[in-house]
Image (cartoon, rainbow, N blue to C red; front, top):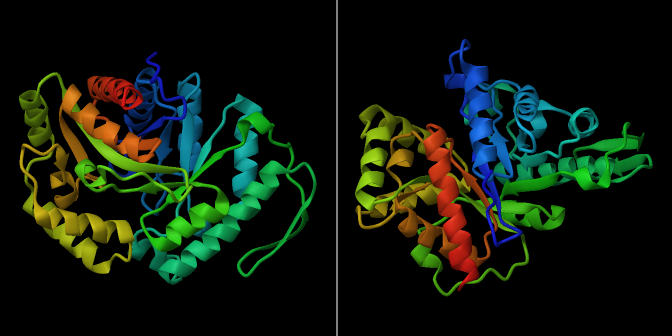
Length: 342
C-alpha cells in the first residue's frame, strides 16, 4: 500500500463512479474494485455521491467499508434527504459495526430539477445557512455523551441523545463547498474543510491562504511517464462531444452554483497542450472538475503548487482503471516531496 508523505496532513480522496450510469450486474463489483485501487494508491477515503439518480450513499458506503481495510467513505449529505439525527445515527452505527471512520461532505444544493421535485426552492445563500444548522446538530450529537438541545430557524431538537456514543477517535471529518462566500462562511462556522474547484496552479504563485480555513480542491488527474502518453490517454478518454457541450451549456443556464460559473468562465479562456490544466472534460459534460494532464513530474509540480498555497485535501475524479489510480498515487507521492523540499 502506498503511503503519501512527507505531508502528514495531506489527505487524498478518490471518487466512486456514478451509480446512475452503472450496470446492475456489475456495479457492486466495480465499486469494490475502485475502493481497493484507491486504498492501494494511498487514499484516505472515497467520495460517495448523493442525488435523485444515485443509489443510497449509506448503502454504497457500507459496500466500500466491507471491501477495504481502512478506506473511509466521504458521504455526500444533503439536508433535504435525511434528518440530522438519522445522519448521526448512521455514522455511529458504522463505527460500532466496523470500527471505521467516515467523512461527511455537506451539500447545500444539487441539480435544479432534483430540488424542484422535492419542493426545495430555498435560495442559494439560505441553503448554506440551513446547512450550518443541520451540520451543527450532527456534530453536537456525535461529539457529546449528553442529550442535545438545539433551537434554530430550520432545526429544533430537545434532549436528544445518540446511542451508541461515537468514540472520539472516529469523529467524522467535515467537508463543504467553499467556492462561494456563503460556502466559505459556512466552513468557517463549522470548522469544516472548504473544497474548491481550483484555478490553474500558476495563478496561485506567490499566494498563501491566510483565512485560517482548512481547504482542499477537487480535480481530475491523468498522468503517465511522458507528456505525450498522458495526452494520448486524455484525448481518448474525453473526446470532443457536441451533445455533451450542449448539455453543459443548458446546465449552466439553470445552475446557481458558484463553482459552475467559475469553471465556465475559465473554460472560455482556452488552454493548450502546453498547459496541464485541462477543462475539456468539463466543457463536454463528462466531468465536474478541471483535470491536470501530463507526465508524472509535470503534474506533480502543478499539484505541489496547490500544496504550497495551503490546500491539504484533494478529491480526485473517479479512476478509469487500477493503473489510473496507481498513476495518481505516484503523482501525489512526488508532489508531497516537491512541496516539502520547497
